[in-house]
Length: 67
Image (cartoon, one colour):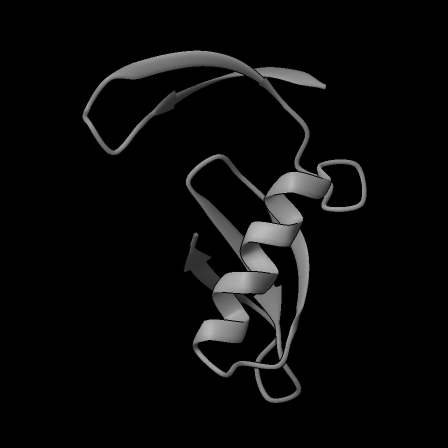
């Protein structure tokens, strides 16, 4: 886990421990996959962050989405 400082959606800076690996951060990974499922996107999540996540599809390697 790494300590990171983020600017959240409310405009406040927050310091927190976070792991960007979706295999380790299972909660964020599940939220990301649920978000993709709601949008009918088939892809794999390869990195998660507190406010967003990165995923790849068959046609495009780098995509970013919100939870």
